[in-house]
Image 1 (cartoon, rainbow, N blue to C red):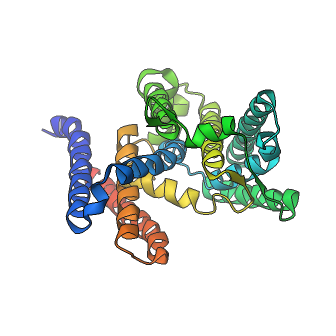
Image 2: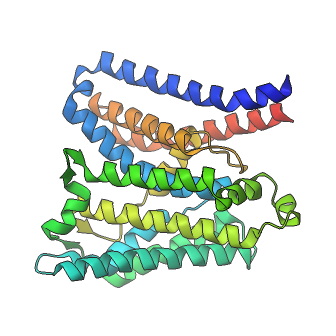
Length: 319
């Protein structure tokens, strides 16, 4: 019986989250008829796509039993470093160089995170928090209050344009989602991620390159943050050091709601999609209902705490 329950439980968990998502959606339609307007639904999906991109990267780190608090700072620094490449008057070649630079610096930050965790043996929370502080500090230091804005139409298309009537952030998020889902479910690296997250020592004794897997995971998290940063900077039409102050909290909340275990080795990309949608719906609904913005910020923290409690209780039941 335990064998069949183990196979059924993940599906029941996903079903319960889908049910919660449906209840929230219908409740918002009832209390705020304007919620169901086409314009608002598109806006919800656009916001969800940005949250989803960041949450996917954080989820990868959570699957190996870690966390990445540096994604917001990564977006801030990379946008500041290369914001001038996107301003009006710059060429398409300059834009490509800027995008490439943002991704390259993001990868470098991921390597630093991985190095601190693997070789300096720092806890992921402290390592990525420290890197976050350093990176954010560099963003402030390099700008001295300067803000880049007034970007070219070509660059702004990435975050604000549409392709076949679908906003570009949604298209980019779906492509990224499919790539990561395939990677986790159909490749050796995906198997290694779950193995390392489930039991690091057992994975090591099984011949899995644990250190390489950890470093690669943090590099991917930062790279995905860099992609999200390009989309967000394009959408915002500005680059400033304050960007992304709450991005890590939002991404962690979305991943946690979606069932990605803080203990590692458990969860899937579909759950992250559901988590991002739930978080965005709640936030959007509170905005439509005129709820104070301070409550909207605080709800992410409450959700994280509740998710940790649920995850802990589920782990206790398994044992």
